[in-house]
Image 1 (cartoon, rainbow, N blue to C red):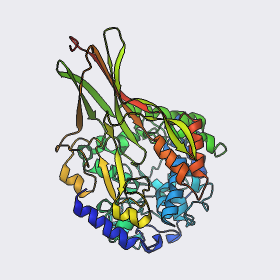
Image 2 (cartoon, rainbow, N blue to C red):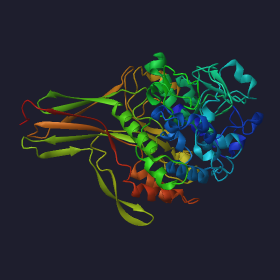
Image 3 (cartoon, rainbow, N blue to C red):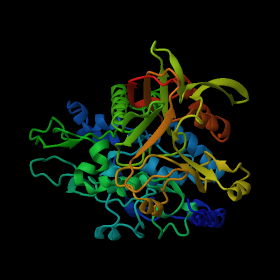
Image 4 (tube, rainbow, N blue to C red):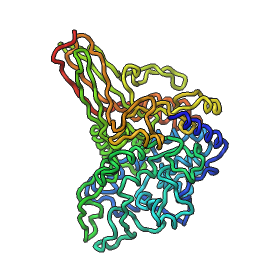
Length: 526
């Protein structure tokens, strides 16, 4: 981040430090505005569930994705608790996207989520997305008192009428439907995802009512990364939905309708993401909350398939004693993307001799001693990060911000306090442009990528006697360091402890292999 941008964020952070969230309001549909009432997921499921169509069943499909667990995710709940400790009341901002039904009903206060009801805990439900209106459309100005200045930060504009927006309009062949239907290009385009996938700290804005979220307080920029990439120019084939909500044949209507039109396509409603572990924690922590175990398993399978398609690897030998790995980003955003804390990707390389003996390994994963709750324990983590390349985004505290809040400067997990990006070497997507990404505060930090570069290359010296090299690209959605942070820092709830305990009970969120490649040398180095 340029020094001027750091100073600007610092000045705004100091100005806003004494403000409560209520004094930094965000525009869009407000709690209890327009007598808006969102239907429960069970009401939607009464017609759009149990259709006997497997992954084409909207309700069953929705249950497989993390949208359904946005308010139950123990990582989120622990982060919410620590955020409220650091800035009392800031959790209301977090609940806008993680429990939007509760936020819109005024139940995001208290900000710890204690007022959320069982339906709010269903996360991002059908009625939330299918009521969304493009805040840039002319009609939006009639629905809210203040229009959002840009996409992001959960600044939603919702249709108060009992009309569901989607890829199809009203269908005269369907009767008995309790609600109307309206065709919405916004809902089937990538821009709708920007509602919650560009996230910025409103306390670091000069005026969050007039500034677009991408212009201040970088927390997450997945939408911006896509919108500034080549994928955003590809039409329907390059939308977020084209990968995360893949189309399946037919589906949508309940089989009990006598007239059941077969549509040419229907999207899976459980978005495939990058987490293959949190599903296990949800099952353990919320066993009586209408969970579908097979759906959770499908979610894990879809996530693994998504990860396997995220990158390609190529090994070459520039000379007789050197190996080069090229990693190509095959996604429509940075690799990896999403919330930055605890999420990382690294390269594991192994060198073998003619007898198959391991000569050296870079990027090893194994147990290391850490202090948790005053005890020394052995926990799995990346053992030699200095020898390999770790792709990650590290938010940080400036020295001034650290002094203000009594913290240590540098990279930190105190995400509502962080005012800098210390490192961001994640691989850009196709169409990357340095100046455009800098305008959205998501430029590389501590790394250099040329305009258009959507790959990275790493060279290593070959150990003497090497005849075979194998490389793997590893991904981990939650690191040991991140989990231990919550176990130590959460003093206002039991979620930090719950997260640590369920993490240890479910295999410590082991890394996934995104891609792997191996090559033999024509002749070993001397």
